[in-house]
Image (cartoon, rainbow, N blue to C red; front, side):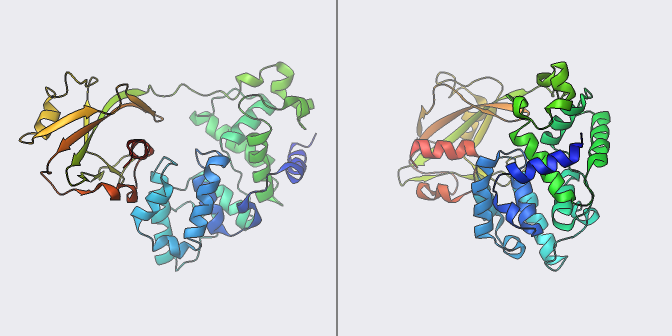
Length: 346
């Protein structure tokens, strides 16, 4: 059985009609690949369409204000992708005179681009024979060939990349790469894969051995940490509040939020005033306070869970400059803050 030919034929019949498959423009392919990282198609598609509509050319994206780019990205998470996208657009526009790099070795130099993304762009747009290996590809290969090497180990990364390379259709690498990714996304799915109607079922090792659900193998992730976040939502008599930009490096860098107090334990109504960080922050201010959510909102990130409480602080005036409450929606914010703003009715 010819694994490569079967996959390519399957793709020609079953591929989804997606806008970035109607072009070989590297800018569009690059946008789609960055947006779809860690993101399902149904969630990422509207973002892709918005970016293409707002920034049809790489020069448009390069000339955009970072705050506008982050606002358009809001809700997708992993905001470093947006910052890297913007930085790379500036690099292409300014250093490369608007010409998108056309080789794997040049594409991988773009900020935020790794082996997978460079392989995808160079093969789809420029027919370079570089095999992609993403989560979908790991799953298809590990099941079909019965490979139990952990996909997130150094040995696994090398093994699967080498195997993917040997299977690559060098005459049409772009279509083959898209075929195996699409097969993993819609046929050989993580849960409830369509094994009964699978084109590769007769020679799939995992199916024959009854171990489909056991593959691929992943090493256990780093322990998830718990943090207590307390946002102080100031509301003045003239309808102003404090909105701060996060400047330190991190997943929310350059996004906006209400003043944040982190605590080792949960702060309650009874312990609010006695908390040292909060009392110091509110020193010499006449205020009244209330709790917006009595049960912490749990915001789950890949490496940490944020147990979040929003405190409403009513004051006459602010110690520092504030902004009109009516303007908070103009700023790029983490989805956690955006959801609160909608729920509170700003």
